[in-house]
Image (cartoon, rainbow, N blue to C red; front, top):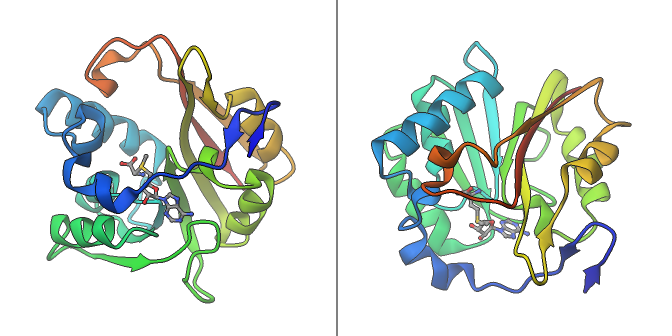
Length: 204
Ligand SMILES: C[S@@+](CC[C@H](N)C(=O)[O-])C[C@H]1O[C@@H](n2cnc3c(N)ncnc32)[C@H](O)[C@@H]1O
């Protein structure tokens, strides 16, 4: 069901079927050194300076999880697709990282708290993003942060969540909300893009 105000939509994608070829997209697999380096640089700026507990929700094949682990963070990834989780586990084998099968909207992490909730290209597709953000807020330690990479994709029937909408949802949950526009940084996507792409770093 579509919500015209924020362009979120209940999507039905077979992520298990997508898993095998997911990393072929430049910004998914981060296979090109310059794309990988660009994401690593952004993550280094967005994540805490010291080793931290990072919860990567809708982690997919674990590409951002791997960058975070390489930067010294302890990663917990959650995804509802067994095939994605299997790939993430393989990609981060031997690292300080665990991957759980579960719903990003209600991650199966028990009473654990985290320093960062990291989410790329997932929140927009979840029903009731406001409720989901409130739940994620409860998973953060004092002084923790959201790192949310989202956007609006497609010209004819755009889907996604505009930065303006996401920052409004975060305003009651975070003390500091900062938007970084990413559309002009072609190196992140492996191509020029003209749709809305951004990251929000929100400290609670
Ligand atoms: C577009 S991919 C993004 C993957 C990863 N965050 C990245 O940026 O490379 C969306 C991912 O979210 C997962 N996903 C979608 N809905 C989910 C849900 N409700 N709970 C957990 N994972 C979900 C899918 O299985 C898929 O791996």
